[in-house]
Length: 316
Ligand code: AKB
Figure 1 (tube, rainbow, N blue to C red):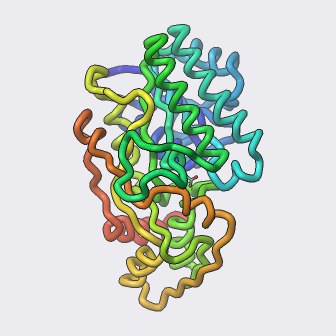
Figure 2: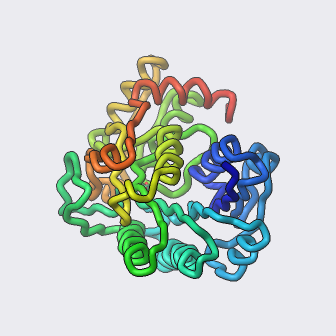
């Protein structure tokens, strides 16, 4: 099927892989990547690119009109750790970019929209284990507050204006193609780089803080599956819980040590430990399974195999 797609924030950790996957599926020329900076060679050389600020409504509208865009994926955001340092900038970026695309969909300039939420919508009073789809949500981080508000606005625009917006609550995402930036779960990528580079790593979280995580291939598959799904099957218009695995820094170290036996990890928790402590340990994603057939493929062991296999060619 031919459709034209725009990715906002295409050069980030998720945007890069999502753009490449969508180009593979729908054709390079059909998928317009955009960001405020240029991305990797594979992204820049495989299809159209626009320098675009996701907070600029008119600029997005121009690109949508020019390329006759039907679907938008908004991947631009400031993540949890950085947002604590720049609260107002985070709020402005995370909320204004969302309003821009929701309003463009409301004005019928686009047909369908994907916006990512996060496990950060949950807070210290949320049940930690097997966190339900609907539960207490009192996020205590700037990022979490913006994601929870975003979820409410998505649901509002769907019910009030019929905007076809779809969303998942991503766990920490592990990938080798592009580095993450400014998240609390970033340690789970840094640790693989450090293991290969110097066989040692100092972790900014404590060894026993268990968080929900997912390998990027699963996250991309989930995103595209949800966007392809018949709208009648989508019963959640805020954001779906999504899960694959849960582990602590000690668990991931043990998994790496099976391949690099002399790998050493020490712990020096900073402010990100405080953020991690407010998030769930594991997630109940039965609603996503039931509604649109979500199923994860990667656990910690095969994620470690993939990371250690691909990272050397990438950065070492
Ligand atoms: C972060 O750590 O901020 C993100 C997230 C869980 O949304 N990776």
